[in-house]
Length: 304
Ligand SMILES: C[S@@+](CC[C@H](N)C(=O)[O-])C[C@H]1O[C@@H](n2cnc3c(N)ncnc32)[C@H](O)[C@@H]1O
Image 1 (cartoon, rainbow, N blue to C red):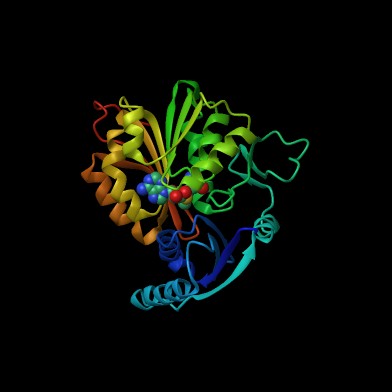
Image 2: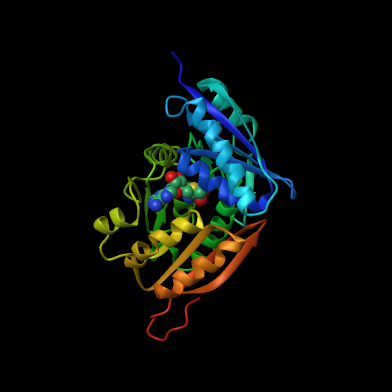
């Protein structure tokens, strides 16, 4: 018998997007994709049908509407239906084209040939159920920030990718020349997806380690910390794990934090100050923003 998946489709105002993502993540969805026409966000998420019953989906729909009422935003519309494994994977494939990101990257779906004459760094991705196709603004902002951070002495730098999803940011960092990347994700399906994408991109496991867990688990592997941290998770989760990220930092460690909806920047920025970080740049795209950070205690040296 083939595996089946619930496909959940939510249409909502862009400023409800973060709250919808948060609910979907809590619900256990590991695959999500979004399109935004400027006025409405269309979010798709997938979850194996053995994990939830229809009554759970009805409850999810209720919570999404309730969140909108509390935020005084028009209520979202949620629909759901069952897909066979084959339909589920072709549904992904239909909605995804190669995409240029930043000045250097081209993210190419694994089932399409890469463009012949591109001078870009090609990241080949089959996301499986994991987040990270390169189409979401939060992923793009991270890749663009990595281009800046690794434009200088990349070969000397080690990077931690917290919440690696499909592994797209880790692979991007390796292609930019990082010495070593340590990736973690709490979702075992994301860990599997990252490992198979590492293989698809011919990245040596010695250069990119991928494990289940979060900042705490990484600290056991690399007690001396890293030169850079990239973390594309929602604002509330970033605040929660910030003390752990801080333990991974050295005096000159830089950070890239994405997945933050504009009106949640304040909670992240307060937590950053408490944990000894300052914001060096803030990039916005649609409703999302990505914060580039550096340590406050850098022995008086100005960071880049
Ligand atoms: C928005 S996706 C980012 C995926 C990819 N890094 C990207 O930029 O496209 C967030 C990922 O973080 C993982 N995650 C959520 N909470 C986490 C935590 N506390 N520690 C580590 N990973 C977490 C999720 O399973 C998910 O794969």
